[in-house]
Image: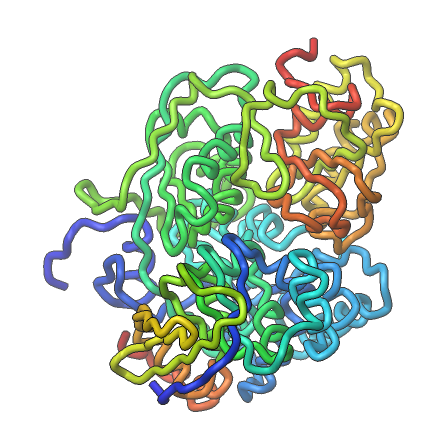
Length: 174
Length: 423
């Protein structure tokens, strides 16, 4: 996996944040331009949220982040808004796949104790990912990504992975 | 091949599709039997397809698109999404299901395009519905869809399996929806995340194939990756006349490993209702009878099939044959096949005469994309699968989920009503 090193403010959300809350299905009737849709990011949870996002912010959630619809626009809108990573106790499988496929860092870790506005740094390598809450001086170990996801992230996302010719000829070894 | 450990249905299907001896936890790259896109997910998938350098489909006979979420389009933008998908389908040779043909996973099941033993991916989380036909069907996003359109492949982590055991005698007025709501309440919102549900036990035979779709459909509200029934006579009867391809029916091996078992005693269950704003917040309906209802929605891939409307009509007729004043009753068949059968047997005419609004087959009002958006502060009772805040397009509406019979009872009385009390 490519080395990861980023830093951002913690933006706290609760459990079971579904993709309709991230971006409402009714909004994507009008456009699929994530740079337009980003002003509605998480509007159902907090109408003031989108305007308060600063580039590099890190979403910190509880369990089951991204449940519900498999809509991938939920990931691309977060990226357009400047969200650099999502930390959650757990992710819905469809959101997690979509995040990795688009190069959005989704890190499964214990988010207990992190509070709104804490400065978090995330560093990662093949050996694993570590999140540090710099306000509290606490380091949190994170779940490593499955090997296939590391390959896709290393390629730069699923677009680049497929462009590189993976899966196209003969049955690949698993 | 060397002697393998006993396998679950998921392990068997994913072994066959990957050409490996796969067990839970393994990551495998699988050949896909059918790739399904919708008008909501395909515009992005087409963009990914182009960025990935895609020029043609791996097999045009194995890729379908359904125009179901914006049916019919109510804005110029959604009309443009449809034209984009139509053009792509024409250029690549994929099968297109037009506006009015219905919901993607309902159409492919009805038309026998998915058969036992298949691996099916769809860019719609409710693709899991097809698991009732003894196959592995799962939801993906637009980029995974595009990759499969090009390569015919998808990578999957072989899921652990939760066994759902149904037993006990089913009470006469207990709906499949009641049991499925009780199941996802017990599992919780992520209780089956990354896992498959496999249904078994003497209770299974008490549910028709149409009813089993309800279980497989709602399983994703607990995060399930797939939700699979074993083959039996009911499955063979459903497939008969829809396809001559018997597929490769799959049963779990004796001694297969399960994560755990959820046991549901049908005889002890009563009608259920999910309260705002989560499908996993489920109570016995008698706890909230009398709550005023302003809109009732009969439809979707959970509750929009022929028997659902028969059940609803029966309750409405027994309750006096009228929709209560101030209640808007919205009726949306899941597919054109359902629509035509309901016209032919008189059901739709009777519902319309009672005051129902009948809308185009498709996803309808479920996610606020096709008309009938509830007004401010309205309470909605729906046969759908999700009641997230703003799900139907209005954040101030309160959405409850229940069986077609319970929805019809509320339409007749104007408030939440135990369908067992309607006589």
